[in-house]
Image (cartoon, rainbow, N blue to C red; front, side):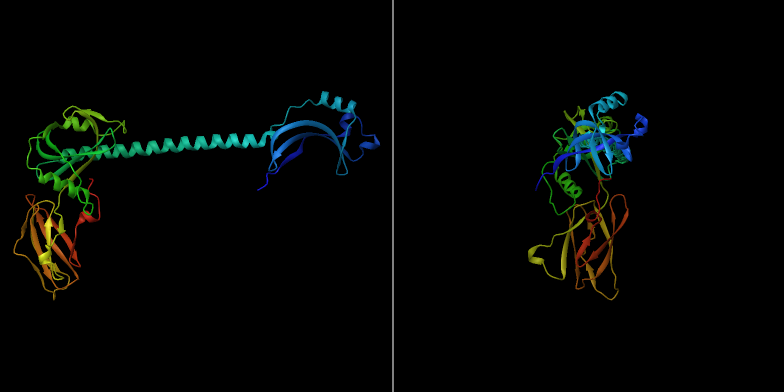
Length: 331
């Protein structure tokens, strides 16, 4: 690839012979006196000036002027270097300024959007905090100084105090995170390492005007920011058929959510035969079975305990479509 460079000029001032009293001079007939700005160019874009000169332009040709006339013109029409001779540097500087300005505006707009999102999240987290009772499984998820998550299961609430216990380990990747947290918290029966924390300390850790800052939580002895409150309000039925019982007609499911009572199983086609196991009460980590020769759909009706709230789930192709499989429970 070749680099195109060279020199050229452009006119910055035009003077008629009449202005100089030379209209009767035969050499000035059909002529124009021009002040030209010479410049060096790169790819035909002016880079820097290389001088100015008065010339006589006639019949498409340029001629040098005698020294006396040159001096006269320089005296009468003094001129500075034309800014156009610096076109390329000016373009680069303007481009840099424009890019910098665009970046600053984009950053400002991004910070405003983030601040608005944080304000909305702050309102939501405060509402969730107020709604916590001892009927639902609740997880506090904090962000630490190392930007890793620290999750605490809420074991009990008494007034404006919460008994919490840190959750360790990672859950299975094929189930929603909130179910893994729930599983971990329910597996923890020993509460010796649990800690009481006040509602005010948790509110202090909710991001608001300073969204990127962590706050010192004295009860936990570290700086944290509350990023999510996970509230589990439903059952979660995961297929877990023992190897010795597996068949194309029979499936067992384990409840990894709230305690539940199965009310009924209604197939989409009334002529099909669907059977539920005798066990209808399915508490956490308890199982039940479905037997059918159909791969069509059915509707499973159940209610959670102790709130007695009714829920429905679709059963399709021997699989239960839990609501947690399609949506996040970070609410």
